[in-house]
Picture 1 (cartoon, rainbow, N blue to C red):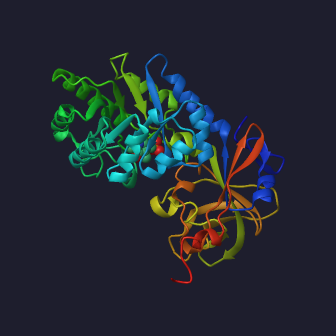
Picture 2: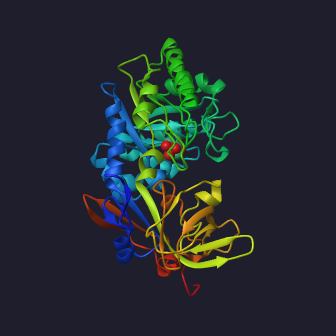
Picture 3: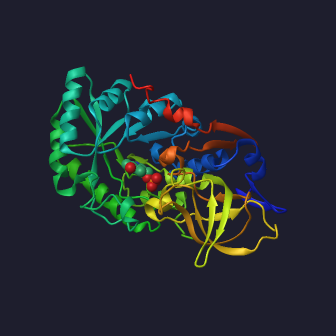
Length: 416
Ligand SMILES: *Cc1c(COP(=O)(O)O)cnc(C)c1O
């Protein structure tokens, strides 16, 4: 079954008429398919064959509890970047023994919480972080399993904001300092060095930079072995891109196969941290056309979703395809800029789109499952959208729409 399909004049999502979802839950609403998420996870998993592996879904791509639970039930591990994400994973039933903790700014409380639940691995991103980790372990009497996130200095050839593996990026330990930090870590009795980690960027379409990084990491593991540091896993990070606008990224299967082609050790456990490729294609954002504003140079479609709901166009100038939920309504095909109600010129969802629609009609914004809701904000005192999951033909509200009381519930008033 195709995820999106017109039957008659109506767009269906996973077999369900979108109109039905809109009538029930309103707009803007994120809509996800459990089938697509599970299918992608399964494809990643099966592609490893007999090579030991752990797939750590990158929670920041979409951190809804029901989605994390879906993945936890399939045996997924999780890549977290904050104490908040740690709590989400545990709440959703994730196994702490399958959690890796990435991020350059782990604070003391976050490190303690992760040690106390016994996560699988800290992806250490600096010398200072290693020292902090050692001193916390000493204080609370724990031993930490560690992988050093190295910066392999390869260009992921993606948007500069989502490239992370270059010398000038803030992530990872610079290549030239890597051996020293491994020696120091392995000398501490509070640290067990178990792996090497990298993550060079996101939305990668060309697998070559990724393969380059994998080669550098693999050869580093041999260098470490030569000085007596025996690691048990290689973590190649996430970053596989998806098709937003006709890009042709490798499939998860091809991606894994190209990774495995550089790994010479069949016993080595391979970790990957996919986020976007699992959640992205599984979700859409539904929005209603509020107003049509025709102008001399441009026509605006003013919709009820905005940059606070889906930040990617405003943030990265990224492209999301937009489909009319009802077609053949007799409306003229016009060129539109699709914009939200927020008081910012940067508040747009799409530019130069030919659409045939009318006020009150529903539009579907494609590939919105990753870095959509997880980046949403309350700017302009807008409650964040509802989230709905389609699973085995049924729809489930997995996050209710926020109301303004939710927003100001954190503000003591009247002021004490
Ligand atoms: C964001 C991130 C990921 C996931 O990246 P995707 O492009 O969504 O696959 C994986 N690992 C780390 C360390 C990250 O920061």
